[in-house]
Amino acid sequence: MTRARLVTQQALVSVVLMGALVVGAASSAWAGPVILGGDDLTDHGFESGGVNFEGWLYIQKALQNLAPSVTRPGASGIAALGTTSGAGDAGMGIDSAAGVAGLGVTHYDGDIAINSFFTDLAANSVNPAIIWLAGTDASGDLEPDEGAALTANAASINSFVASGGGLMSHGSGSDAYGWLSTLLPGLSNVDDCDSAGATLTPAGVAAFPGLSNSDIDDNAGPCHSHFEGNFGGLTTLALDGQDRSYIIGGGQGTLIQCGQPGQPACPSHEGAVIPEPSSVLLFGLGGLGAGLMRQRRTKRLK
Image 1 (cartoon, rainbow, N blue to C red):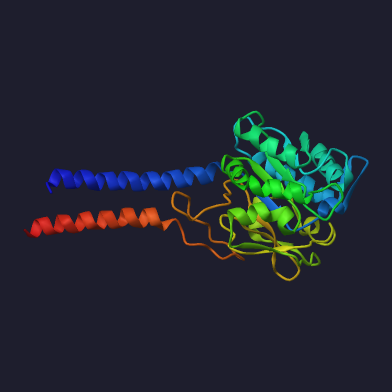
Image 2: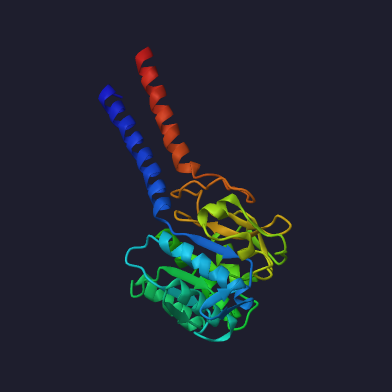
């Protein structure tokens, strides 16, 4: 191999490696904020005189933190999936919380409406800033067929967040989080939670300034599930009274999937099993670079 060809190959390796790192960093920087709770706080709130209390106040404050961190171009408003405006605790809860937060809401109730929403989202016919999932254990929330529709569109939810959209959800079990387990097969939503003594983690305080422990503990209402296992790009935002991950997600730049070839490396965070970083491509490139260096040293010896 000529010296010129060797130098060219080494330069190509450096460019590709740098490109991989830049792409990973850029996709993470532009991704959206996420807050996923094992709660049914739609069922434990109310509004009086234009002021939200307890669980509805939590939803309001969460939305107020999500909205400014959305980076999806031209996006506005909330797509509420799995409920009808003014119907039951879920519909009234999101309407009241979003109203005080100054955000418009479009409701998509039923599996047909949810599937149509994701079709329109892919076609850029709709462009919400935040997708809100109604959760379970409250009136007017997700039915099994709606949970199945969310799971069928798990990849679209992931792409929406990666494009800079915000995501918020509630609930427990496969109806609420089958889509999340599809994206992160090593993650489990476990049906057990204790909101008494629940606390925000430092990551939760940083991601959502203005939220306090009283907004997510038993003063707001009970919780019903927690998360265990492989959190991917998500981190623990709040712990329940037994130090289990009760709310997970992250602020601007949060990705759900990570650590696989072509994806950014997963963050290091408390309360999760971190998957192997996206080392396949980088190791392969590094190995190629090392091989070229060995060839160059061999050439010199000859």
